[in-house]
Image (cartoon, rainbow, N blue to C red):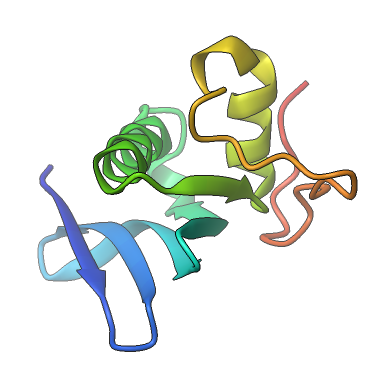
Length: 111
């Protein structure tokens, strides 16, 4: 499964995986003022639990570091990953007093 990437002229982008002509997973984001807002991660239900979202997450982290972006983890999945190992993301985690709750993408993190 190859991770592909796209970003449009409005700086809205996605890391995604296509399989057999259809998109099976995506991590959607937008960039503004060198801050990447990662607001949605999705994997088709029949493919959940196979580490696909984790691969998309890793690609997003790599991209943010390469571009020198900070990341707002608006998506619950990404926020949970950041909170699990905050020391691994201090260089890219854009922290504010009104931290995102992770409810933007509607996926509840596993606890």
